[in-house]
Length: 502
Image 1 (cartoon, rainbow, N blue to C red):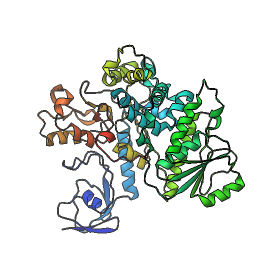
Image 2: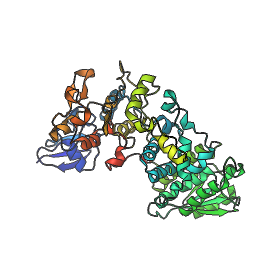
Image 3: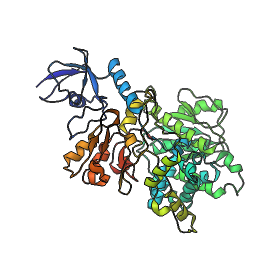
Image 4: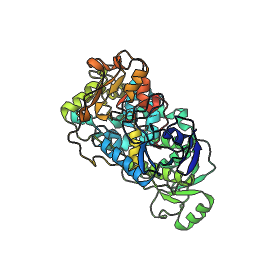
């Protein structure tokens, strides 16, 4: 039984144990893309390299076995540089969007394609959860938001943009945003936060912080919450709409203290009483120490986004994570797509029943039909994609290396529940090995050599024939969502632990 050192920690392991397995037993994480328990090491991505300090050699930790007296470094400078170069090369020919253009443009970062899927499938409670988690005030914003998300919608380039604002408004208007589960919060942390100002940014910050388990108190100098929205005429924003959504914030457990004007002087007293302060109005105090800022904005949805961002910073501060550097979230973008590419996307993702809808009088029912037009250009693993995770960790940017030619945009699997997008595939081979493990009659295989190598079902058979029994594990194992469920995000379907803090 060999004994070795990994990052200055000694460990004895059984014969045949790989360096990766030994590191994991010590709680040391080594990045992987092509490794999956239950299949042999693939050695295809080389992201899991480590350094043998005695020889200076870089080793693939997923396949290299632990040897007596090895001294392994998993995060030295040359190891990190090698991993970053691997990732730079992989993304140089990666053809996929991490976020749909609509969600990427939404200042509050709502998961718009997920709302579309839920609405079309009839899961209106799920859609309400999605829009409320994203927008906090989906009914109010259904009236006052200028809908910046609708301009970059790829459907607009094909025929006509999706009516996103009307969709989230109709779900909230129908009362689905009042579901009890939306009022569930994480266990109380014992921390208390003061929020100064009760317009969109302040209330959004309080909403997120209360959902995170912190007690929140909003200080407002006026007699009612809502800020500048209170001055809008009834025809632009009915008072009952705003009042209903403010009432939901109160039911969540947020305390409102009205008629109290907070000044620079009184802020000192508030800081003594509370663990953190969010200033969401002008002229009180700049951010410093335990005082954070949530800027109000003339664009109400931007104000909501600012409030959510401030809340996440406060949450990190309260969890003593203020010293941890924020990771740049990697973004892969396809960019502009031409009409033939959009036709490929439409023909595989649009719900065919929605192409010629019958006239519907009810606005909510009409929007459910409208949701079927969504092209679903989002990634089905937007929160669990391992490629995105490690590109974020190592600061990778798109197109550092320019591929001679990007792959053609294709989708395979027109009629089944599973789709395969070759442009996202890193050719790790996991799906090939998993299909073999399940004893698939046809399975998957590698076609071609070198840069032209591709993964396909042999004899051009339909995708569902190749992975009839192994589809679920192939999808869960795929590091990039190249293979995915057609209408379900992977994190929802496979109960995968997500890594992006939403």
